[in-house]
Image 1 (spheres, rainbow, N blue to C red):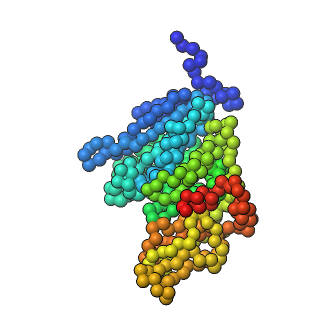
Image 2 (image 1 turned 180 degrees about the vertical axis):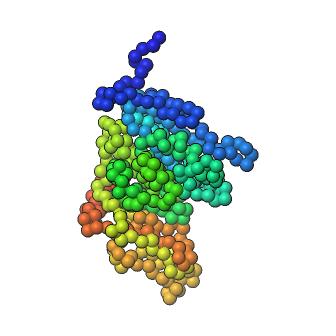
Image 3 (image 1 turned 60 degrees about the vertical axis):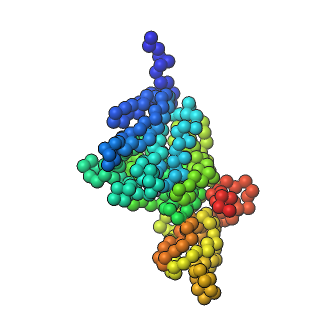
Length: 366
Ligand SMILES: [Zn+2]
């Protein structure tokens, strides 16, 4: 027997009913969740390459949000963020739909490699993809058309490249107002502004009208619990800001800096080969002239030691973890801070209940 209570409830404010989420080959109705294994390619054996997708469609209308990870196959922190949101959170009051893509680069994930192990193609330079093109672009196309284009906004999770680590930060084209709103809602201390390289998911999705940010957090090949928890706070804050969880509140990180072209920023590179004695971790504050690291060699004779000093006062956003370099290899990513931000940061460091990345990094790394 048909009954009006079978229908998804109307949203009182908009009068709009929740809608099914549809993709090529299926649909997920309001109030339902689905775990999908979606074929994006085929192996040398002719077997399907399938990515895991969880779609959670709320009973109430609202935005459709994608959460994606492991476009680079060895970047694992985001996988756990997306998995917890999809499977551990209570979405009974969800307004809208979550499209959760915890592992996009399945061949790279299986091999624990950054790139697709098929001619080392970078999936995150292959969006929005194209039919009839390279293997990477075909995979990107299947992901993009089915699971990105139906969305209203998205968050793509990454880590630093193997051998380095990043403090948690957002990368976003803040000149687009909707992207700027999303970036701020994620509540990280640091936002690095810019549209991103061609072919990245965040740039191409944003160009296609789906405001998207990248979240960088920690290092490859790890689950880093404190960073994962910080990222989950960010997701909850975004869902509050955009009305998916309207009863939740938007999180304020305590201080925030948007690094744009006006800020000093640089990758400091080694001018000598050797073994690196790093004096600072990710998320640490250094003053101009302070020693960042010393480069030495197995003999460790005094005249062999090269010290590297901070060229300006700033924050170490990314840093070497594997302590060996050739000349020209990156040592750390240093960004300058405005006087206001420095004051806020200094104040926070003296606050016992600080939840900033700076404390998290210090607690985890030492
Ligand atoms: Zn990445």
